[in-house]
Amino acid sequence: QLQLVESGGGLVQPGGSLKLSCQAAGDTLDEFAIGWFRQAPGKEREGVSCISAEDGSTYYEDFVKGRFTISIDNAKDTIYLKMDSLKPEDTAVYYCAAGYTTAQDMCLLPRTEDYWGQGTQVTVTA
Image (cartoon, rainbow, N blue to C red; front, side, top):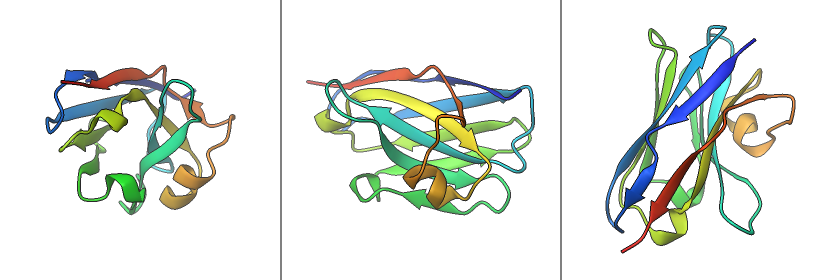
């Protein structure tokens, strides 16, 4: 069974950068779409960016376009989210998840039966 472990979160000032990692174990990512999601206190979980391990296609929500970059290292079964120009409103717990779907559908239609990591906290504050 696929297991996902996030890392790389932390405290950063506005305008700063962080790079999150999502390490997969227990299965290969070849047929999965993998996504980054976030949930801020008092808010619903939302998709951030997703990528297809099969064809490399990506999807970004408008609020991160031009600031965040998703990538995958298939040899390491690791997905990354490079976050630049961070804003206080990016503060949230960031989760990675994987499912048998497309990159866009992974972000827009995540399912509880998909595989989820435990999350990593990102805090953007002066």
